[in-house]
Image (cartoon, rainbow, N blue to C red; front, side, top):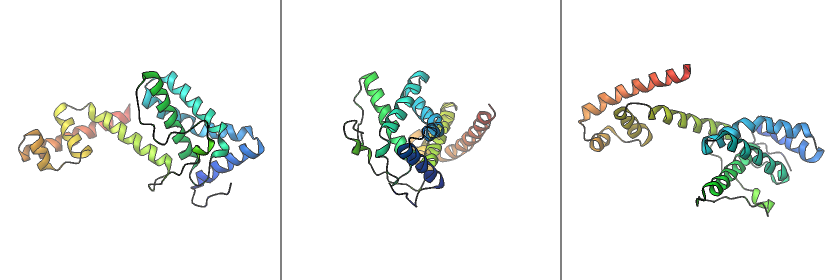
Length: 201
């Protein structure tokens, strides 16, 4: 495997650890890779399954699979991207088995064919860690918004999540345009207070 000059410094460092683990059997390299991503993988799984024990079990399975198929990792993309993809598929498997629900299985990895792990992941300009942080912030914001008063919550969701104009919100809520603007201004103030309170907790 050749190093990819387009990797971030963190990506290059992770790749060096992969090489040490694969070609030199360096147990410290395996341990460092796991230490770097264990908490963030656990957080991802916990947000999806809402159970600490299940999240811990899935996290361990993610690393077991990643290390078992480590020779399938390609530095064409970041190790973290590859690992998050494995985590997502493991979580889909878990939910499907536990709740016997049919869930989308696109981009599913196959245990029978290691080459299925050799997928290309298109970059949207953000490092995988930055993508995850961005998603976590959005989830946190939605949780804060959900605790606002109903009339404020509706206004914020329509304006900032669904990106409706003031005129469209006026029609949806059957409120005068001036009322929408005034209440949305108060809703933003309430949201700022809620966010400050959450930061202080």
